[in-house]
Length: 363
Image 1 (cartoon, rainbow, N blue to C red):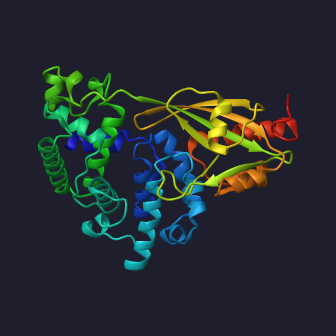
Image 2: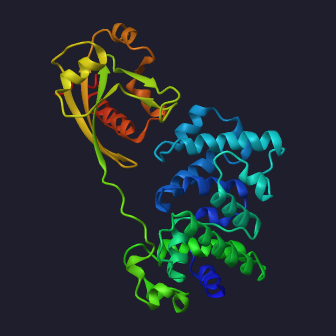
Image 3: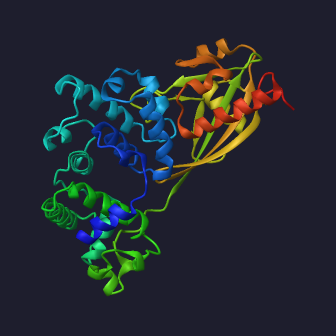
């Protein structure tokens, strides 16, 4: 364990949230890093800290502003909980991030791992953590061959993580922070899922999986279920003055509060005109393919074909589709869209800049 702490202090990557002990900054980074790569998070975190530098500013921000700052990170429930927690801290803790574990754990969107990460990194407390990287390190070091997601195995791993951090606590000098971050760093840079760099590992000498050549079978995570394919149509319904129809997704839909273009889910590939008629009740042959967007959401692999159609009277069509508003293309960048629809926004703004006219007038 001492070898891991020493290694981390000498070899840790320089990341902006490692240059502070501010619990708010560390908390934001931990929430952003959930299911998102470090290189993706860095610019989002830096922009967030410029725009909302403290709990007070987050608690007081509008939901639209918060969603816009988060746009592109996905899993928008995370940022909603982040703001709910900031408001709870303001109301119950005088705006100061709580130090005790139970209070941290009681905040919206914070589970056992995140509470342990904040408590150990920001306050040097002997609290265990267990994320994917730490699971990989611990299962290999101890040669755990059972599925780490099984309750019995998971309980054992939490026990091992607790043992390690309590031993680190005896060393003082914020060693709990260095240990927990060291395990995450080791899993992210050395103890990789495939092709681990065992020769560079500071704790290889005590690793059962390395000694017994079990690296390729540990951790024993079951193979994921095959992805499900989905086909969607999206429609850029515009007029000659470069306005389009969009709506803000209502509760309780996924991505509620974000904006979107009209779209239609299909279990099969059908003609675009048929999909447009299903959505609008209007039949037209003037649809133009603008782009195709491939993206993934959990186990779904989605292909979204985006068609443009110009309608002389958007207000008449809007009256048939409650919730949709007429909005200028030039201002779409001000709103927060899910990632796939955000790519449509970027495409439309390029078309508008190139044509200097209505987005569908360019030949």
